[in-house]
Image (tube, rainbow, N blue to C red; front, side):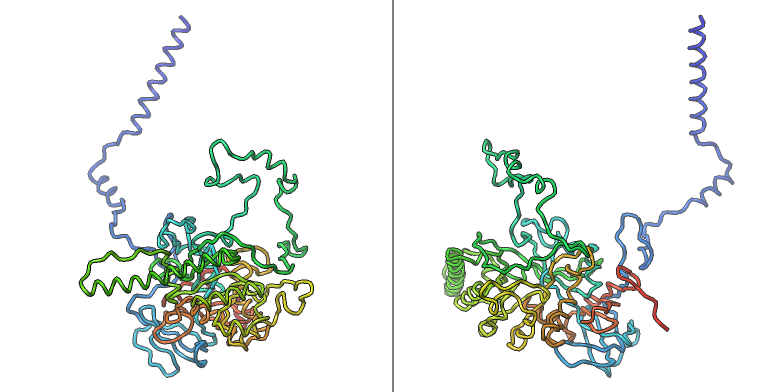
Length: 527
């Protein structure tokens, strides 16, 4: 009986609790006056919501608005700055007018239209935006290395690295979108084999491979010497050897602008160079195959011309099929250049001879020993990209004709060889203070001056020379009427390591201001 009474009592308590909760959830009747008042306090839905104003925090889940935005038809005027045009004379206290993303006027006595947006550049140095001829992992999403993905689908205008690049003056970059790390992927024992190299029933014994590796290397990776003061890996300084022969692999490069926050106008070119991985042009077999590729491309143009002539005469013929890639066809037409790494004298000579024999444009990267044969480079019209701070020791017995030389930039300028500077690492990074990554691009140009080049040639190696290599000299690389308004406002000499980029414009739009973005130190002005 006691147990039954206890169960009944608990059941009654549960029912009362349920009824009370239900009563609280049910809506209470309201008087007409109270109902009207409550409806007035409810905010109305606004289908035409206003966008977030620039400078205010964005709503959760939405990208931030650009710092400043000008309408398409508005005129922007940069007034009072010292303008370094690169290709022409320097203009003191000049004015630049910009409309529709293009430069419409440059000079001193220029009338500013009424209603124009003015940017005060008094006390500033105005230069064209810098061009990084070798860049990686900036402005591309994770699918940027996918061969099957479209370039437009891989662009990321909100990449943080874009702001970091703008902070050092880079407004345009050439990026590899196929392959990486020079086209090679280092295989480690604990990574196994790629899926394409595996066969059912014949998979390698990973445990057996691991047993052949030293325990320290297996647990902590290969040994790398680091600097005791900064902790960064010590760069190699041993003598350079000829590039070993490797399977020929083409890579694709694209040119993008650092138009932070805006996808329109970000993609400039989907085919900047015909890039070949190191070793693709080394060895007799690779060079024979390369000659065959160029011969097929030239024959295709002959067959295409014959087909067009036959069609004009009223004949019905099938057009010839393309035997090679579009990049090789454009290379034969000299619409783009072949970019290949070569460092030793013998490797550089091989590439020069091939380019002269087959008649295409050549850009040599690395070019550590180019200072030994500058006349041969100049005669062939070869262009060079290199890192002035790179140091490699000479080979034994060839101390005067091998290795790097700090004065190579002066040799290249005196010989008339166009050169563009690159950084020790082509990606943006926040490691240490040594300045090896992409943010040290202006510093490399300053080291070119240390090597004997003039300041004019050093600044050209950041602007007009890489623009010509990319075939975009009519759009970028200098401050001229009709070119894209990619402009920097600096607080000092562009080659001084103490100089900051105060304002950066890409396609006539302000995309970076140091005192607002604050990715670099901002100091109060001295009285």
